[in-house]
View 1 (spheres, helix red, strand yellow):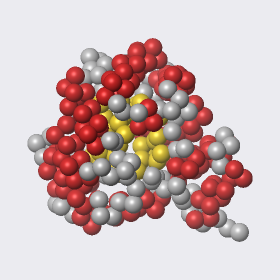
View 2: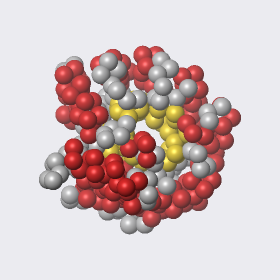
View 3: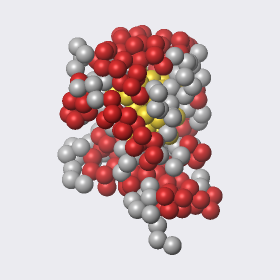
View 4: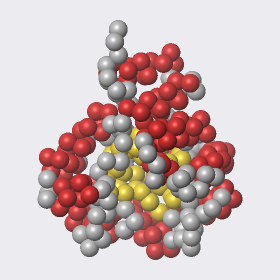
Length: 278
C-alpha cells in the first residue's frame, strides 16, 4: 500500500542498530534477517527504508557499508541514510551513488555536522533532513524551532538544494515528560508549511510515546493529527496496522483518498490487521 500518491512518505524504521536484536544480527552479518526486514516493511507499505548503523561508533562505517550492500539488491524503494557521522554517510553514498529518491538524515545547526553532511547531499543530489536544533541546545518552543529552520533553510538554499528535497524535523519529545511538546510540534508543522509550502516535514514519531504503555496507540493518534497539520514524512514501523491505519484514515478524512479507494484496498489486503470480510 503506497501512500506516496496521497503525499505521504512512510519511512520504515526497523533497520536501526540502536535496537539490540538488529545490532546483534548485523554484527553476525546475518543477511537473511536484514533482507527479511526490508521485504516486510515494503510489503506493509513503506515508501522508504531507513538504514541506521549506529550500534557502535567505532564500527559504524563498516556496518553501514555492509548494510547498504545487503539492502540495495532487494530494495524496491529509496533508502534513507540515517547517521550523524559524515564518514558513515559518505561510505553509504559511495555505494548508493545517484540512485533517485535517496534521503540523507540529517544535518543540524551543529557546525561539524552541517559542514560534513551538506556537501554530500549536494554531490549526490539527495533529499536532506534538517533537525531543528541550533547545535548549542535543544529547542523548547515554536519560535526557536522556526529560527533554527530559517538558518538551516538558508544553508540548504545557498548550497542549491531545492525546497522539495528539504525535510524539516521539528524534533519530537516524550509527552510523558512534557505535555506541551506535542502541541508545539503541531504548531511548528503548520508554521513550516506556511513558510515553505513545497518543503516537507518529517518526524521520528515514536519518541512521543517513550515511557508509556501501548505506545503504538499514542504514536498512531499523533500521526493522524500531524497529517492534518501538514506533516508528510513519518518514520514509523509500517508493519504495525495501527500506524498504517492512522495515516490511511487521516488521508481519507482529509480528502486525499478519493472514495476511500486506498483505505479499502489496505483493509482488503490485510495491511490494517487482517483481511476484510466481505
